[in-house]
Length: 224
Image 1 (cartoon, helix red, strand yellow):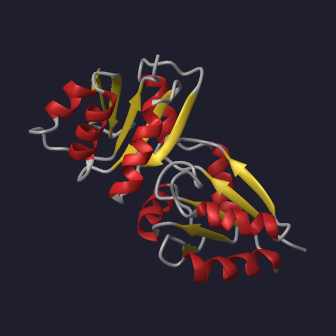
Image 2: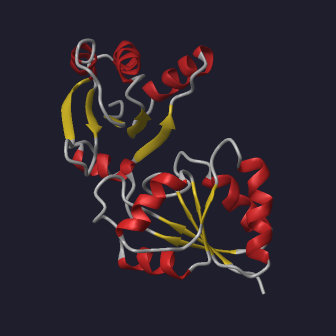
Image 3: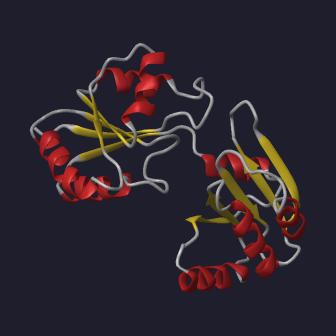
C-alpha cells in the first residue's frame, strides 16, 4: 500500500513558528526530504527529532525524485520540507509534488509560515488581491518583459530577492514603477526584522549606499 507525501511548512526564522501538527508529522514519518539537510538538521535537533534525512534540492531533483516516489509507493510516509517556509513556493518541491500526484500518491499539506504572506499582511498595502512572482528572471530580455507586464498589474505585487541583487532590482523597479508605494521586508521573524515602507524611488536611492543583509520580500502597490 502506497505511503503519503506530507508537505510540511517550517519556520522562516524564529524556530517557535512551527505548528504542533508539523512536529508530530516530522516525528512520525519514516523519511524527511529536505532542501538543505544541514539546515533542517538544526531544526530537528532543536525539537529532539531523529527522523532520517535525505537531500532534495534543485541540482539533484531530476535524479532523486523517481527514487523518492518509489520509496513512497513501497509504503513509507515521507515529509518534504524546504530551507524555510512552505515547500513548493519558489523551491524544487513543486516537481516532486507533480510526480507524486501523477503517480496517484496521497499528498497532504501541513500549513504554516511563508514569507510572502507575512510580508504582504505587514506591508500596509492592499491585501484583497495580489500577485506573487517569486524571483524575477535573471536574463535581461525576460526580466525587462516581466517588469513591463508587472507595471500594468492592478493587484498588489509580491517579489522575492536576495541580498546581493536587491540594490540592482530596486533601481530597476524604480525605473519602471517610478514613485509607486512599496514595502521592503527583510529578516522576517528574525532578530533584525525590518519593514521599510516608502516609494520605490526612495528605497532604491537608500540601497545605493546601505549594505543589504538577509533575504528580502518586496511588496508593491498595484497600478491605479
